[in-house]
Length: 160
Image 1 (cartoon, rainbow, N blue to C red):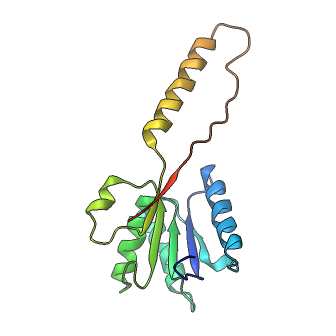
Image 2: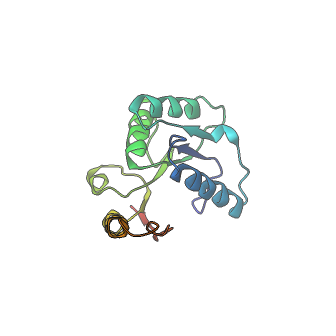
Image 3: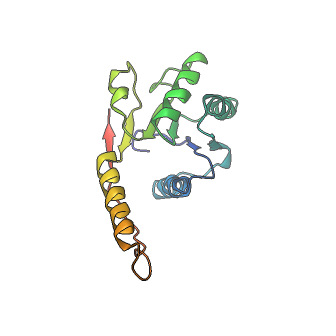
C-alpha cells in the first residue's frame, strides 16, 4: 500500500491449513488499515501445486482491472505465480509486485525475487516444537496430559 498499490491480490493456501485463516485475516486487516476496498475477485486459492497456482494466477490475469500487487501464501507459491506471470508477459515487480511468506534463502539468487517476504524463523519454530514434544513425552504415565500451549512467534518483513 505504501508503494501506491490499490489492487492487491491474495493467493491463499488450502482450507486444510489452519494458518490460512490467520494470513487471510492479516490481508483483510491490511486492506482496511490502508483504506483499500476489499474485492473478493482478488482473493484466489491454491492447493500449493504448480497447476493450482497457475489457475489462481489465470483468474487474476483475466480480471478487467488486474491487481498491481500479489501476496502469495508462501515463497513456493510466489515463485510459481511469478513464473506464470512472466510467461504471460508480466514484468515482475514492475507490472505486478509480489510479496510472500518464508523468506527462503534461494530467492536471493533470483534476478527478480519477491519484493518482500515474511521471515518466520524456522529454527525457532523447530526448537519450540521439539520442546513441546519432550513435555508430552515426559507427561506420559502421569495423570492427565501435557497442558495445551498456544505459542505465537514474532515474524519480520524482509524487503529485497
